[in-house]
Length: 205
Image (cartoon, rainbow, N blue to C red; front, top):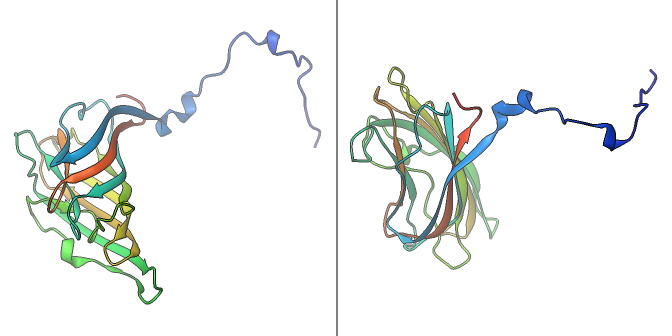
């Protein structure tokens, strides 16, 4: 097969660059950035609407103030409270630094069944200066008033037993009302530090 080359190789002859319209489904639009500092909660209370089909939340170097606390999330469904009814499931993999313990298993302890409480996203964070958690959560079609609102979260954290934990959580807000707010918190103490970002995913509706 012959290799075809452009006859006119001069960039000065180009008058316009092609658009990337075909790739817009993969676009991320940064909407909000929050930096935690001894924060009881990190809350995204605006810009979650019908503009995008899904929203991606990233949390980077989240540090807890209390040892063995869990990082959790909850959702607002039109009221002032973050207490949307949720059903969820999770599993995790872990490996300790001393190489004595490693496994992948279902984590039924933090499953929810029609609960309004916070959804734990990990198991037992460490509190030393170099211990933290990073990951993401995707919320799908939060403005729907017909279907439940699904979410998927994945993160890795330095567990308080000196090991790496990889956590997977999925579920749905079992409400027909739109989800218009997302709030992160610790199961005990504060979010000592961390950077949180919210992105709209794909083209605007």
